[in-house]
Amino acid sequence: MRIPDNPRVLVVGSGAREHAVLRTLAQSQRRPVLFAAPGNAGMAAETTCLPVAVDDVVGLVQAARDIAADLVVVGPELPLARGMVDACQAAGIRVFGPTQAAAQLEASKAFAKAVMAEAGVPTASHQTFTDAAAAKAYIQQQGAPIVVKADGLAAGKGVVVAQTVAEACAAVDDMMLQGRFGASGQTVVIEQCLVGEEVSMMYFVDHETVAPMLPARDYKRVGEGDTGGNTGGMGAFAPVPELHHPAFVERVTNTIVQPLLAALKRRGIVYRGVLYAGLMVTADGPYVIEFNCRFGDPETEVVLPLLASDLLDILWAVTEDQLANVAVRWREEKAICVVLAAPGYPDAPQTGQAIVWPADGLTQAGAGGLALVYHAGSREVDGVLQTAGGRVLVCTGVARSFALARKIAYEAADAIYFDGKYLRRDIALHLDAAD
Ligand code: AMP
Ligand code: GLY
Image (cartoon, rainbow, N blue to C red; front, side, top):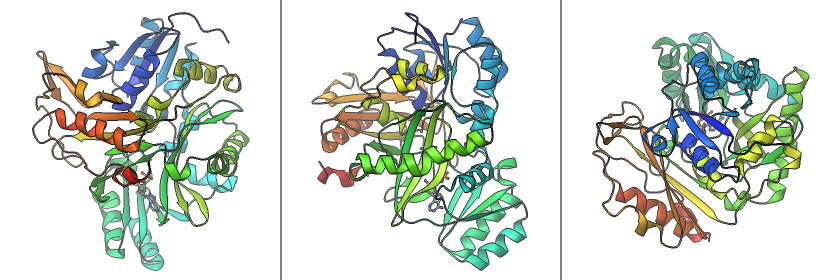
């Protein structure tokens, strides 16, 4: 594998996940020249941002050409689902991520369920409906608790874990009759409710090798104590102490990831990129809640800071089917992140508030560990940093213990101000005793 010096790398996306990818790439021994499209205010302060939206595949490929990119790294699911990787390959541009066919694993829950059934991968039993009355009849018959999901992409918000039949039926009406998620909600999947511990397992994957990342947990509910609606994620930590051992990871690799990749191959689909398995560890072992075809957000903001190997070498190796020849190593540390959200998130986030940083920076927060602040929905208007999305900033603490990592993350989170700033106070709280 020959990687040029100072490779030109374009990271597609504008969230904290992409900011974390960019920062990790910036540490590469290859000394890459980094670009982001469209990026955000935080990324713009560290690299060159190109004003192309993530859904503009043609524009993104042109941007990659214009900067003579040696590698394109696609962050979000939308361009993957729209064939960004296929378009780059057709243009002869090296790209990290799954093809459009492979990205269906995330873009269509019905497709994912069909492949899991073929592969014998444990997952919740389910039925797919395009008719609201039939969906509600099935809910009546199954009883509660039960899970209702919009079939297409809904930014992590298209899932209702209903505790009662009435709540589940209301969710069906919301998605199918009120059009809450547009076309994504016209097909719904009704699923058995799994009970257990949730964990996100991400893997680097090439044509025949898989390399697991550290097990991570995210906090999807908006409210403390896991109450309220689902969000894109309010915080995360890694590793998950009780699952951070080889036997668990091997079980996931052997019973979930490898059979799934084999089933895709039988359909003529070779998966390359990051495969994200959202799992529920039940009394019967790990079950798949969902697959994502990309790095998780906010899991990436706690997993990549713990990577001890060179991320650029890993991503490059995947594009060459050389992953087997690259070591993927992790630090023996802990990481916790907390999301600073705009008021009104997730339903109706208000934006345009000035973001105020402490005059003395975040230096004191870093004592005994590392505070990292990744930007998500931020922009600069006339030299003033402003909120520009639901999730605004992500504060990560990295340290030898969870307690210290937590302290560092929250000190940074508290030191930054904007009107109506909302955060959960209970991220990784139970782990203070686990160190
Ligand atoms: P998803 O967008 O599919 O990841 O679902 C969002 C969240 O809903 C998950 O992280 C789980 O907390 C919950 N969830 C989804 N499916 C199920 C299920 N079958 N049983 C229990 N909880 C679920
Ligand atoms: N953290 C869940 C996701 O990235 O979809």
